[in-house]
Structure formats: structure tokens, C-alpha cells
Amino acid sequence: AAGLTNGLIITRLRITPFIVTLGTTSVFGGLAFLVTNGKVLYQLPGPFLDLLAGKFATIPIPVVILAVTAVLAVLLLVYTRFGEYCVAIGGNPEVARLCGIKVSAYLVGAYVLSGALAALGGMILVARLGAADPTVGTDLALPAIAAAVMGGAALRGGEGSVFGAVTGAMLIAALQAGLTLINVQAFYQQLALGFVIIAAL
Image 1: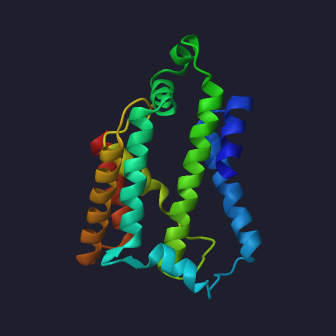
Image 2: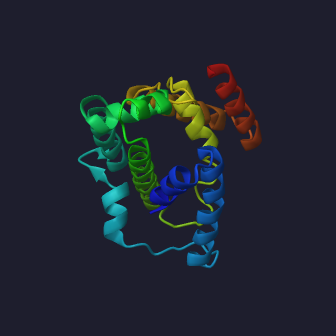
């Protein structure tokens, strides 16, 4: 629903995507506070926690979900018309439109898919924490951008790969874990991430 909302606002009202997603981030954050009354929710159902934060044999389920999602994303981007058109639109939406691609429809589809994957990531994070905090994830935008950029994605669109994004995410996670292990304070870690994005660009 969040992805569909973003997609429709961007395509129907023709507002810059960055501005729309920045604004709706605030709206959705406010809705999270309304739903939870600003409180952290505990006592989540055991099956939910086991399904998303348990283990499959000895492998953590989030790792299994990552692998399956990455494979499906590669298949979608490389072997389907939807993926091919999304890459074309990212490269140059006007040229894509002139080639007969229904740009608005594919953009909305991409935002819906993005919203669904964000929801999956949110559920995994909640399951791993064992609690639903309305403020959780608000500090993940910068690392997510850094991961995509380090993985070779162009901020203007049309470039990048699933393998690159996963690799970038692992590098960012390793960087953050390393800085935490050597007792670097959180705000210095944020500085480091900012420098990483600039250096990668």
C-alpha cells in the first residue's frame, strides 16, 4: 500500500520521487506512532518469530530469505519484460516512453515491489529484535543508500545489479560491525558512512 501510494503520487502528480518518498516517510512514521500509541510492542507471536528469525537447519532464516530474494530479483531483472523495462526507464524514461513502454504503469509496479520488499525487511527486523518499535529503521536510509552506491548502482538510475547491491550491503555491514568492535561511537560511524558514499560516487 505504501509503495502504491508513492508510485501513484509520483506518476499522477509528477512530483520528484525523492521529495515524495521523503514526505511519505514522515507520514508513514507518524502512522506507526498512531498505531502503536508511541509504545514498543512486545509479546509477539512465537510462530512469527520462529518463521522470520529462527534457523533452517543451522542457517539463519534471514540469510535464506536474502538468498531466495536475491535469486528471484536477478531472474526478474534479467529474464522478464518487467525487469528489462524498469532498467530502461531508469536509464532514460523519455526514451523508454518513445519506445512504447507504459512508463507510469511500470514505475508504479516498481514502487509496489519496493514497498513489499521493505515490508519483508521490516518484519524480519521486528522478529530479530523480538519487539515492534515505531522508531526502528529510521536510521537505515543512509546505510541502504551507501550499500546500493557501493554496489555500483547509479543514483540517477539505469545502472546496478542485484549482486552489487548485496555485496554493497555486506561491505556496509562489515564496516559498521568493525567500527562497533573497536568501540567507535555511533555518530562517528555516521560520518564514516557519509564519507563512504562520497568516495564510492
